[in-house]
Amino acid sequence: MSNRLASRLAPVAAALCLFTASASFALDPSLPPSGNFDLTHWYLTLPPGTIVAPATLSDGYTLADVFYTDPRSGGMTFRCPNLAGTTTTAHFSRTELREVLNPLDSSYTDDSNNWTTAIGGTLKARLKVDRVSTTGDPSMVGRVVIGQIHGPSRTTVVRLYYSKKPWEAKGRIYAAMDSTSGVTTPLPDIVSNNNGDGIALGELFTYVIQLKDTLLRVQILRNRGTLVNGMIRFIDPAYRGLNLYFKAGVYNQNNTGTTDDYAQTTFYSLTHTHP
Image (cartoon, rainbow, N blue to C red; front, side, top):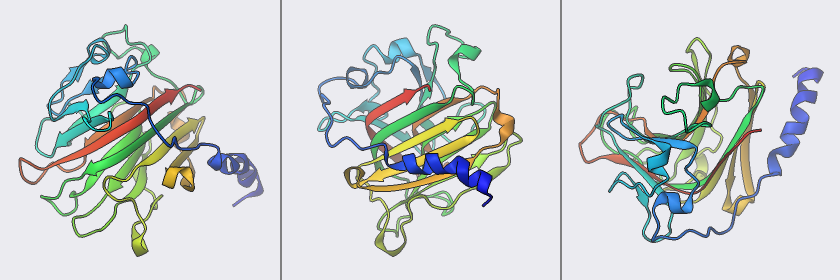
């Protein structure tokens, strides 16, 4: 590593320990998701590819067995089957929030709904993965995207994956990045499940995805924040000036298997900030 690159990364690496996970959450199981979470600047994409507008979402919207409040903890639960519809630009189904900075623009295509690398942003979530798919193509089984920075068209600055195969005791977390031309680069595990490590289904953890200019940081906080795993990368500089936005929830990466198979997460906190 060059001295110049090292000097740029040093302050960011030192900041990896700045985020701490909340030890408890004040969530009411009797309320809809919007009663416990600020959803005014998100819309929800449902498995068939339909959209729930911010105003509807914030007015107590729920959908049985798809998007609802966990009756025990008050968490916001996202469930998505393997076999469902998709949006026009996707191969997989999702129950996923899409950030909209200007929810009054009902087309959601205006620049005011997005941000750029110059502005930057941080997405922070406390969650557990309740279930991953267990049937279908072995290369797709057990994969789910739990957070993203999305770019124009089909490009994604970063996708954060949780993956657990049926024969594995715990899951691993890793990321993948796209160039603006659509070339995908899978990255090494942020949390490995080798040698008994990994994150089990139902285990609470926190992720932080942060981008400023071309510097991307992803952190995973475990054991109430005492264990921190992270990565730092530079994204494709061609993203400068392009529209970006956060996504969070369940983007099921398996479109094969049985009709009753699904992936599910429950979120206990979710914030998106700029800068």
